[in-house]
Length: 306
Image 1 (cartoon, rainbow, N blue to C red):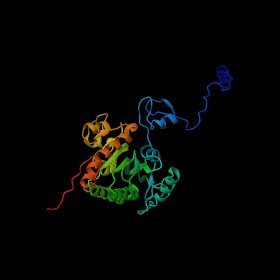
Image 2: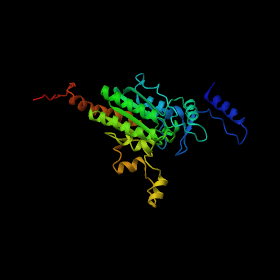
Image 3: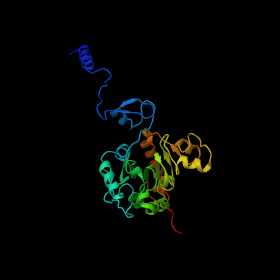
Image 4: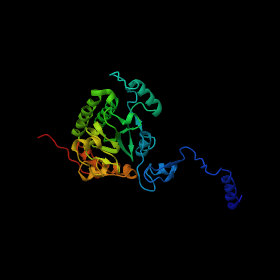
């Protein structure tokens, strides 16, 4: 069949569609950008790490995809998957918290709002935690706090850098004070990690808010953020009502926080893996030298007691 015959047959098949009725597009084959409304072939979009090819808008990415983007193939080892959430306060609104957890687990195929593990990032061994906004808004409950704390403690023991990709609505109200306690617990683990002269990099994605922002999201040695990400503690309307004044349009965006010194760099998602690898390699000689580990091409000094 010639190319002209193919177009002729295509025109005939299109003519069979009744007027006013759109052609059906296979579900998931194309994706529409929320910012510029351009339709993009999903395969091309995934190849560009879910960043719009037309306007550069960073679409929301969930934990399995994020791990695939950052960790080298066949190097990811998940940890603490056996830790499951419970309902210690017997919280109930429209339905019980236990039922809500079960429904969310079935829908997302996740056990909690964070995945943790060890893997290689461009050849560098790292401890990685990735929050998932699909699971009750990425809220921080007891299990989220426990998994992140254990990840940091394991990284301290194995002398690994820690990278946490933050995406959260804050503390989980269904667990009350038990949720708020996780802020101090994670912060304590990070302090011990820092005292061991190890690197911690949080990556703030859209959105990072509430108790996560007030704790480990802002405790990094180097704090990175994705373009246009919403980063905040309290909501915009709450602040405006308290201050009784209008806030700037770009308030609580990554760009605003960069200009005010809360974020060290804004890194496009397509450059994130490369940037993280550069930062980790940059700090590895310092970490190793501090403990008398010899690195090829670098002279190290081990202090001796006098």
